[in-house]
Image: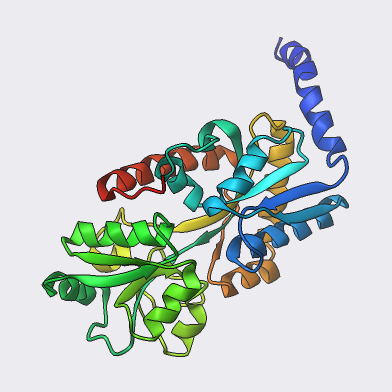
Amino acid sequence: MIARRAFLAAPALLPGLAAAQSWPNGPVRLIVPFAPGGAADTLGRFSAAALGAATGGSFLVENRTGAGGNVGLEHVARSAPDGQTFAVVAAAATINQTLHRNLPFDLLRDFAPTVVIAMVPNVLSVHPSTPVRSAKEFLDWATAKPAGISFGSAGIGTHPHLSMELLLRRAGARGTHVPFRGSAPAVTELIAGRIDAVLENLPPQSAFIRDGRLRALGISSREPHPDFPDIPPLARELGWPDFEPTAWQALMAPAGTPPAIVERVAAIIAAALREEANAARIRALGAIPSGMGPAEFRPFVAAEVSRWAEVVRVTGATAG
């Protein structure tokens, strides 16, 4: 009876299996919604190379920038769900879902979460002249300042902006946000001593932490970064086990893309990330290889959208 049921069910599986076996059907585009050179672009090109090597197909990275990544994501949301178009999606997309009032797509409805390429922790850093050497000392210092501290980020509503807001609010400290057009200018201003702190992505800070121009006080990942073992996790340092505002980069497909194709892409990327040479390259960027597949990624995205919606609500952040 079991064998008969399996036989009867098999025809329903055949179209999906056939689609995965014949995929890719021509060039596949990986849409990066940010400019070349950043983490999304670098990890998108890594993914394109891994997929090309595994399938023999042609995978092309296409940068479509604008509106904090929304222009590129809208393009993918409207693309045919045939496995020929994927988006490189950053954690910021889960914030944009609430931050932008008239978003022309819905991250949970219009996309098929495929695979998380890497987690990108944020690092709390100060200028070396600042009289604090731990996250606890930083929060005590910030709380004691009548006007609070000044902190920079890559812009209003970005992951680093809201992560710092979350940190300060939880500690009862005050902060003045100074938005910049990208992470690099914020880090540059901190090195110059014109702002007090950042809770920015590790990649744009890594070189300056190594050479001593920044003092890193804590990292947002649950465990220390393998390449920066001396930076303690903020959750552990502060006794806040649920405090883990870590960014990420991932691949998503248009909703309706055959699940067999989504699963195949996820498996290829996960296998590539298990190769130590690839993992070492990603760690060197300041990221942490992931490989989280569709089954875990879907509820993870939903939880991220919900969590950041509450942060947007309490901070009053808006991008119109």
